[in-house]
Amino acid sequence: MRIVTAPLAALAVLAAAAACGEDEPGSADPSSLEGTAWLLVFGVEVEGWEDVAPTATFVEGTVSGSTGCNRFRASYTVDGDTLELREIAQTAMGCPPPADAVEREYAGALESVRAWRAEDDELALLDADGTEVLRYRRATPVGTWGATSILQGNAVSSPLPGTEITASFAEDGALSGSAGCNTYRTTYTTDRGAIEIDPPAPTKKACAEPDGIMEQEAAFLAALPLAARYKVTGASLDLLTAEGTFAATFTRAPEQ
Image 1: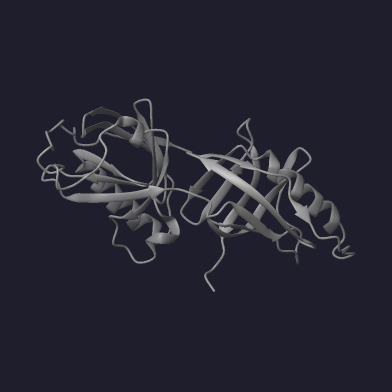
Image 2: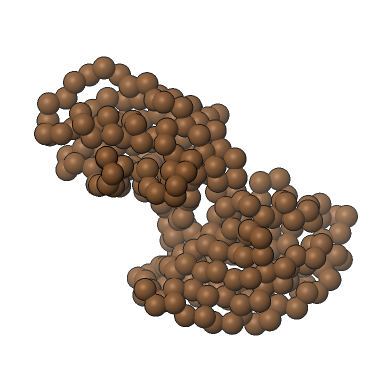
């Protein structure tokens, strides 16, 4: 994949204190900005953008994430509530609608950023006039997902045809779903992209078809507790091991 570097307009460090004053509470503590995977919730007006929602993670002077189409990376500095981005590098993959249009709007909004403000579990990026141009929330696995691949032995493979593996992460820390034959329940905790899943307890039904379904189920149930980190990008959820390899990947289930 070809990497291209396209400088962002130098984002001067401008004072935004007036725009983020006492009437607009928020945190200027860099720890509120950094080390969190942020998922966009406002700032793009392309129909269907939620399916490819951009992301951003600020860590030690580098922000990276998804534009909704390609991956991007830029350097940044923080001084109080001002934010300076120096340049952006992104992959050059061609994407179908709406991802291509989402990328254009998101990249344009990033160029206008001059300040930031964190409120509870949300991050706002503002322009020089103090107008909010992008808003994110902490990316979490909460929701219902269908597995697209699982770790089986030393390889990651797609579920067997005719089988469905699901995971429903509740806000209270409960995790349940179908392992392909049996249903299961367990609990999980998250902390800024880290995740810990307790060994799941499945029901005891035996399924004969399709061939290999019980082995697949055992592999999935064993893979869940291996997850050490998670990544949410648009409608996708990845569970990663401590070594950074895939334990399982999912796509968000359609709302009922």
